[in-house]
Image 1 (cartoon, rainbow, N blue to C red):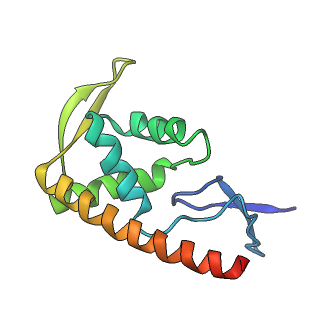
Image 2: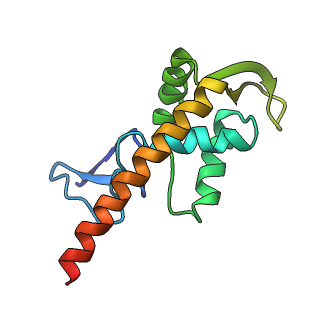
Length: 134
């Protein structure tokens, strides 16, 4: 019987196999900080609750990215502690109590720094790939 291990991190899929941990190219982790950047950028457009963030990232990525709630909520807590987000009590579309997350000025500054860092990293990767094709 084959076991599946659900990894609670940002995935381009959801499941990877256990025990061999052989990764399908479509089920790879993204770089560290990717989840934070996507959350901050998503909240830049409007405040949202956690489930709305999950759906927003999935929809905007054209269904290529799926954020597991087991990685979303710890990331939100870290970002609250850092002062990048603030939260207030709210009500979901289904009438359930929820926390609505909002980006702070510190969060905007952090996002802008991370985007510059990402763009630099992406440029380097692009250069390496261009040499590999030559």
